Length: 175
Image (cartoon, rainbow, N blue to C red; front, side):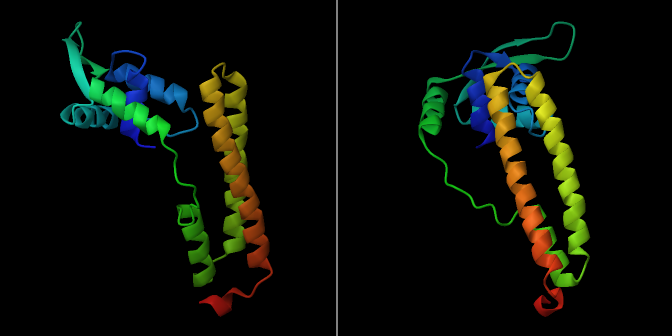
């Protein structure tokens, strides 16, 4: 998923200015990191440069200048094409969690303790997402939260298996 295409998906509902685009994105993906305004406007600038969106209005109602963006015909086609294509399946074998665990094993650090503490972090994140899902009234938000929950659940299962594997193995042989 590219941020640019997701922002175009927000604009598929109609023209909007950057503040509203950011707000809608953050509402649609409550389990994701909130977007920075600079990231939104830089992405909109690239989309405009590439002819996928256009500025249709600029106003300054006593505050900062606000530009309203809309999808172009080329942007609508690009969005439809993106939505029609499938994504390659994982695996995501080189994420930071795996890198840190493997490095801990190879350096003799206490990987078992790290995995135990990381499991607690994941469980806290899962509890927060469950609360978020219970508050949500949007099907889209619930789908996004469920996706994050299932990934965290898979990570917790991996953390448990990795912790057991490390605890039962002499890691000195892997240095």
